[in-house]
Length: 222
Ligand SMILES: NC(=O)c1ccc[n+]([C@@H]2O[C@H](COP(=O)([O-])OP(=O)(O)OC[C@H]3O[C@@H](n4cnc5c(N)ncnc54)[C@H](OP(=O)(O)O)[C@@H]3O)[C@@H](O)[C@H]2O)c1
Figure (cartoon, rainbow, N blue to C red):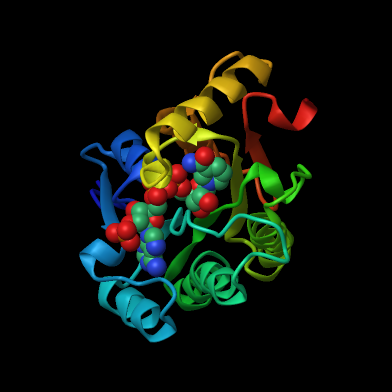
């Protein structure tokens, strides 16, 4: 009997959506590697990413949720340095990870990236997030062709209550959540565990590749 465990790497798995995915996948059949800056992996550093995958060896499934910060504001106000740094983490970090994990992934393995509803919902003052997420959605489909039979998908969350908003002042955060609750078709905001379920589908469904899964409480149909 084969007792080999299924191995998962979750970059960004130390908090928020990534942590919820790790919780959902934890059982005796799986071996889960959670990584982020707090465990010594900075996804925006290509050498660091390369060494990380060399040290792990064969992997069944890679999930990337790293990098929730991007500056918001009008194009005339946003610091280009901050916008580029956000690209370095979420966009280029995802590319580094896909590039360096590819040779270690098993043929029935998968990569699941994370985008966000701003890729396709037009909201003023969000150009950095819109651009990063739209770029990653385009890349998801190209990688699904290039890396086949490895499957490549992306999950696109809407507003989700996570540590991503820990630095907002509490009153503005509550007002953002209340506003979303009143406007979203589902009448409440997302929890990390709601979004995590979509990753499990992307990882386990053998017929799914090149897909972008929207889990946004109906934000895109508003
Ligand atoms: N929450 C939302 O409303 C929402 C909406 C749309 C899309 N998303 C997307 O969903 C993903 C996860 O967001 P979240 O809400 O779960 O955010 P979160 O709670 O802030 O978690 C982000 C994770 O990324 C890690 N990380 C940040 N910079 C990193 C780096 N340079 N290298 C490696 N790891 C890094 C963090 O750990 P360390 O600090 O230890 O590095 C943390 O584990 C992001 O791509 C975000 O853009 C979120």
